[in-house]
Image (cartoon, rainbow, N blue to C red; front, side, top):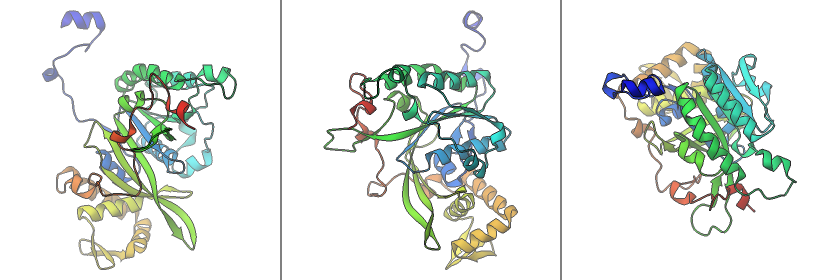
Amino acid sequence: MKEINSRFGKNSIMLLGDNKFGEVRTTPSGALTLDIALGGGYPVGRIVEILGPEASGKTTLALHAMAEVQKRGGAVALIDAEHAFDPLFAKRLGLDIGRLFLCQPDSGEMALEVADSLMRSGAVDMVAVDSVAALVPRAELEGEIGQTQIGSQARLMSSALRKIAGNASRHACTLLFINQIRHKVGVIFGSPETTSGGMALKYYASVRLEVRPKEKIMADGEQAGIKIKAKCTKNKVAPPYRIAEFDIMFGSGINGAGCVLDAAEKVGVVIRRGAYYYLGEERLGQGREKTLETLAERPELLSHLEEETRQVLTKGGHAVGDAFGEASSSEEEPEFLSEADEGEAEAGGLDAEAVQP
């Protein structure tokens, strides 16, 4: 063992009993209900994929995740491959844009090389890539528009992830990929939906989080936000297939207070009697909206409620699976991608993007 460590470096091989390996650390998502479904939050040092259709809150989730890292003293970076970053919107979500590393790459190779370099430097705790679909290989950029480049993006992702995954773990940096939905042609049975970038990301990701808009949130006759339903279609650090719901309000992002109240009610910290919400014997408000107004006016009460809810869950006072269970086979809306229905996105290296109509 000494010879191996001498040749390849310290801790190249070790006895597991001689080393203390704790639970996988997590960073909050900004939505307590989602944290519970994920098993505590996004795992540190792992690859996470957030996927979904357009206008389903993918970028909002990524910005909230980076804001949570900053709140805890960490550094974050955004690889804006779509060249669509809105600093004012990010600021409204709580992100300190003055402490944000931003890269708007010229190619997919540049984006992934910058992400890898940032992780190896140890200077950042989270890198978000927005999005996989926008990681255009140089060969495609140098070709003519409409020229077919079969499997080029899939090969790029496969090559990069082999290298990046280990560096993310070694440097305790969470790598968050945003991905888009694509449709496969000629599918008769099962879901025709798949994701960009080939199959590699599906294998390397420790968490795959699929988000879908569930319903509109109306206020004064106008749409004020959307209710999101998120499903962990893959989770290597906690039980998979858990589902979480949370509200995203236009202009302000995730309704954190609403997440806390919903989670507290589900685990029994808050009791609803008729139209009223109670914390112990203290009446919080009549109806959900009035109760949320109370929590907004008393931030110390909101913090207490969140702490109590987390304690109940972590101490085993309530089974997480009971509060935020697995997807039921009878659920119809929204329709999620399933591992069984995804099938092969590429045949002989054929990228999903190359087969879309």
